[in-house]
Length: 136
Length: 478
Image 1 (cartoon, each protein chain N blue to C red):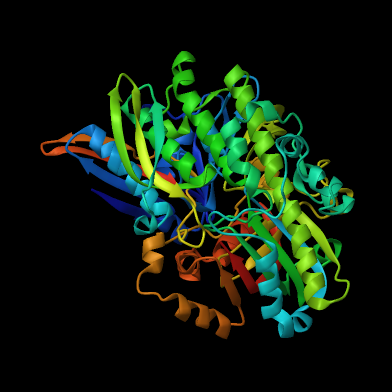
Image 2: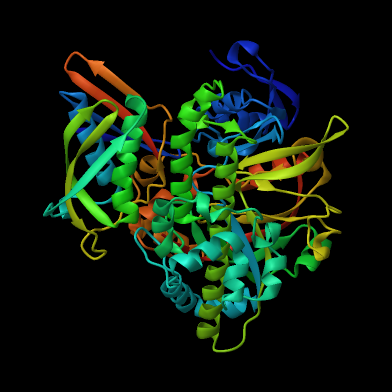
């Protein structure tokens, strides 16, 4: 579950999960949804994805940076993310998608980078919520 | 806690240094009273206050009239840090390293271009790839990319994408010395490799414009422009390569900051001493990314020249007026309280504006000052200014960079239809060609501040002088 946030020059995302791990997965899906139309992606190929960080905040930023690397440098669009290892400053799992086809995957915006601006990771009674802003 | 601003005069406002906030200096905002009220509505001034906490900051933390909320630094922010004892902050440059503007004067007039405008716009759109995922027409190997990173616009010229004269009319001659391609990650190179000579998306654009009004005939004559003349403006940066350099070094600086005992109020402002290994590595990589951007704009100008030749089937002269960067950190010597100091000037959404007589300017511009190119929003106007002595005295030779965003992208899209916007612009004589419909809607003129008001402030404050107001005819967007 996620939503897209906007304010002046910003675009951001807010994602939820029963666990922090699930919130991370949903945040990556939200990033994908900002870059490309999710429904256009056939999740037919699994790609490995992993990141590390000094704390939860940098772990989240670095995790999303990995997703962005696939989207912007490797030209692979991703629809689903599953984290298989989460802890000790490391997150690792798989993402499903396919190579980007400009005719099939209508581009939306180019995300330049993932920022720490107003970054939030919160535990709530019903689970976890994360908020991240992106530079576009 | 609301920030207290104090008016110094009609165009200058101060937020006094507050030690409780960790500020090492004042904030000075250049704006009219009405603009200040609008500026205060987002986090831009908070961010300017945060910049005032940077170790080794020299002079005030400065905010230009087009200031709006950014990431770490406000967009429209300027900060100089002491070269020997200060810090460098990648947030003070931003993700789009050496995003900038290149302006060129054509030998055609508005009335000559109008009848073939649609054809011209289509040709430019075909020849210069834009939008998400567009690959450049210019294929380079990994080794050639390193040459691009070291030599910038010169690489493009030496490989047939431009002429020697173009280099003289770029800030820093289109190449920052001491660029270090080895400090640019493999990932950044991979992201940038296919993107050379591509425009990108967002607010980046390529416009065919005409000179509507000359305000300074002498300076206009030196720049080779007159009323009715057609000019081309290219606004873009270092694409994915620069974005990845910023990402890589922000990631490294978080932990490094702890080692250097630096505390700052916003993690996006991460910084390290300029003279540390991390600081030097970032600056080497940043210069390399800046050079990529210059090669990018140079190659794009080459393709634009080709598109004009194809459309008009005759020789059209297109001379570069100037090329400025507005996201950069540069070592410069400035006079502060009567003393010459070496500083690193961070310009985040701010343009260098050196005054007449400055030795870094091309000979032709020594008498009039540096041309400053200010792109406006899609349907309105752009400006050419010249740097003035006031900028050298007060703002480390810097001025604004654009109109400044007012509405979020969602708000801009709301209740608007791309076809309707396109029709309205066409009625006003402007043809728009964009890769995506959202690109048109998000950049509607109403989404931006009035560029004329921004220009009025910097002109009246003595930071820069008006030379010419330009009106768009053809807009190419990502």
